[in-house]
Structures are given as structure tokens and as C-alpha cells.
Image (cartoon, rainbow, N blue to C red; front, side, top):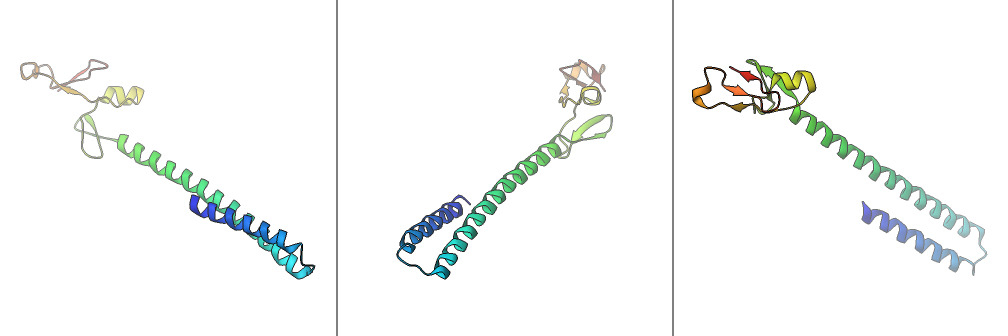
Length: 126
């Protein structure tokens, strides 16, 4: 896209050179064509710039949507999991504060009290 704008800028510069050359000629139709060409190239440059800005905005929107999908959680079997079935995540932290906190597995000898523990809220889950 930047190459396109550079090309258009070069074309505008060339038109300006033609205008200087144009001073030698008195033909009104020739002058009108050069003026119209200058206007058209300037409008194209503005449109390309607008398209580049829109393209960047759309790319940012796509990134935001992808990031939201990664943090979107599904509740099953008493825990939250992400769309890749990664987890489990703490239901208390997510429900109350929308924090995505992965539960840590307790040592085997502690499984009687609960298999998972949240490192933030300290809740224990079976």
C-alpha cells in the first residue's frame, strides 16, 4: 500500500512538472486536462490512505476477536475450560472477577480434600 501512495505521489510530481511545461503552451483544453488529472490523482491518494486506515482498523478488530475467543471459557464438570479444552480454570475467580486463573493440581495425598486448588482465591475443588 505504501508503494501505491509513493507511486501516486510521484505521478502528482510529474503532473506538476507538466504544469511547468504547460506554461509554454496556451491551449486551454490541455490545461484543463492537466488540472483534472491532478485532482483525480489527489483524490485517489486520499482514498488509498482511507483504505489503509480502514485495513489497519479491521486487522486490529480481528486480533481483538481472536484474543476474546482465546479467553472465552466453557463451563463443564464444575470447571471452566477454553475452546481448546485447556484448563481447568477457577469458576469462582471467573464468575466473580472475570479472571482466568488456571487451577493447580494438588499432590496425590491431598486429593481427599480436593484435586485442584486456585492459587489466587485458594479455593479447593474435587
